[in-house]
Length: 345
Image (cartoon, rainbow, N blue to C red; front, side, top):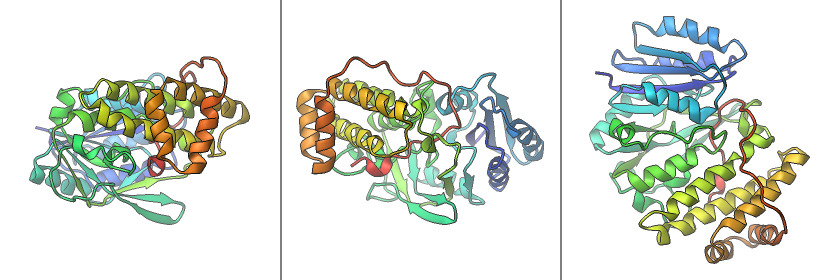
């Protein structure tokens, strides 16, 4: 019986993959399964993974697979989920790394708590700086109802802490269809996923366990590239709104989803990272997105925000325009988690 399946997508990360793989070896157990998914890398990543497979055999179970075409992080994770045999599942990105022995502590944590999933703190690493990022949930080491942890709308909560790799998930969530991602989403793929988990899972806990080191500022990461692929956040949040609107508690939960969507739109509008043509497309698609939202709930959301962001979005809302197609028509670059958690409130 496999105790833990670790799903690790890789795409053009030859500079970082060796450190990631060394940290996996420092977490190896005979009943752990490392699923290495090469998302059609064009650099030396495939050769690095082949050598790592040989190195890891004997200390852990290893599954190595390669996509013929690049599909993006969501699709690569789904490939791993389809091959996972573990009682528990977790994720790691191919340019991040772990503290030695972290996964044994993580498994012990969820087994002690007996809940559907556990969310953990992590360390954000930019150049030589290290910053502790905490799950925005006050009760630590206590099993809670994830649905109840979505609110309040005006404060960051655990549903805004979207990093899939900052946690561990019981296999029953996979069997119930709650762990797969929306195929083809190139960024913000964790957002519909984390909202679905909080709406539909029965129990979770937040803990202060540290062991994941998240590398920020990678030049090839989607969070650093201002092209059309970044605009998939609109498709991701449209999905959050659509699914939350169908929830039995839609009246209570939709204001939070809409306010978060508005905050992320404002963040992207002021990020300065987009090429001029993409920036124009961003404004047009964002205006169309605001027009799709329920007018009364949107007005309430804007009233609850600071005046600068609210004024920016009200101007955008009044903007005349035509229908814009959904984002995501271009091919992907390296997988990246959404980096907008801090602006959710």
